[in-house]
Length: 139
Image (cartoon, rainbow, N blue to C red; front, side, top):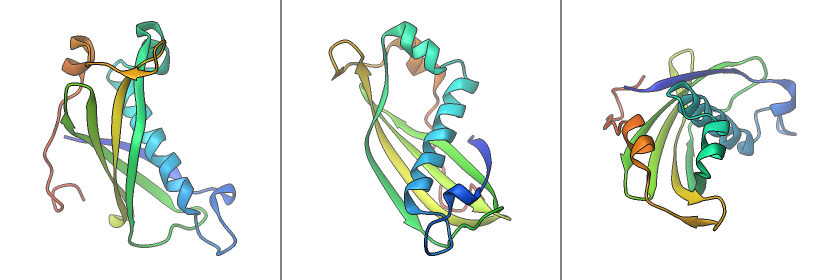
């Protein structure tokens, strides 16, 4: 129902407050989304050959606990919906089964040449499955 991406927090992720900086969460989300897409056959190269791919329209993150150096995180991600030219992807970032952040990204499917949204090609649409997961289902 969801894809899991493992990540260990590095010294480079730590900010002046001694915990992972906020923008690193966005990077981890993107790494998880790319790993999920690649795992189902849609690598960066596959999108390049198609001449189209996903770009971010917006991110929303709720921080619940800080992440620290050497924390072993699991970024759980799933596609919550697929629309004609957009998709909503959700994330749950956990440490030792405790949720430290929840998030979502609104993605648009863009033609690389024109830089404009296009309808999802059938091959892409059928590769991704939209899953409805309530807050307690992915822990």
